[in-house]
Image (cartoon, rainbow, N blue to C red; front, top):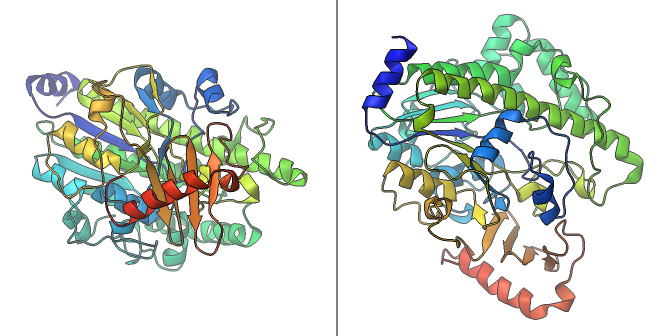
Length: 460
């Protein structure tokens, strides 16, 4: 079937929109190509990012500048997204847990409504199992709600499980290419070297994981029947650490300067800048791959029927307070990007509404015309996107292990076991460097009460 025939068939049917969810791993929310005036509103400096495809989605769509993850850790965050539940109730408290298969997912709801449902890349809903299938398909994916899938391990899981014998399709690919040993040695060396290692990967570009998994996403897109609506979630492994980039990816970044991390050691600024160069190079590469995916959507004749969402499971500290990775209650760890673009999505809109990542669950369901009452802690953003309301959440919540946070948009409370409560005026102090809890006891008490209500599952 040629492109004209595909386009004609696409135009003939009156159906729900296609849904394309682009989900990098560990992309912090302020590292988007925001305009200078938007950055100024939030006390941030411009970043020399190169993300033209995401920038176009932002320009043509609606951007949410204050979205947070329900939990800044891969498996819990993705379980919240799948279920529409907050961290305390999603059934996945740590990474080494599998998603409870008796718990309904948005993917099942979409499939039951007639969607083809696909996943490519690092889904992270069965990390404990440690087996992805050598072709990226195991029966659990069908139970989770997928009709199509090529799932693979994340950067570190791939090495931990498949160094000697592959347990996922990416490591099988590397073993078959004779590249597994060199890749395993490189990642293990980086783990020993620590978070400031920025050496180039020995892998060629076509064997770099995000490039490889994009090929899988394109294959799935081409496999979707043209007569049905489809949902596809593309789970990139970057810009997650380690900061391994190819020579082609790093080209042009060696002399680029970035704003330094917040409250960091000044004697490490050069090393921090090198990390930020590699992080930006990963984002640029993800953006390039997004362009390939969007081109395929266009080739199918589906561009006018497809809502595109760009977000991430959690952020990355990137040297703020001299810390890296996630799992922290501070902004760099919990803040995530969120962009909607496509039919019915207003263009050029920037919103500072309080959003939680699991709000995507109810939003996807409403756009698809799907009922999912199980997603009781997810609030659809569709009325907000369409301008029918200016309100979304009065408070915003995130948690992990022994800490919880809540913000009302002005003040943010961090309650952490064994530590004094911290309160930040995020309007005056967006980077959360000045604890004002001692000056605002009544606000601490009010937010603490709301925090406990949310933990117990009561709306707030």
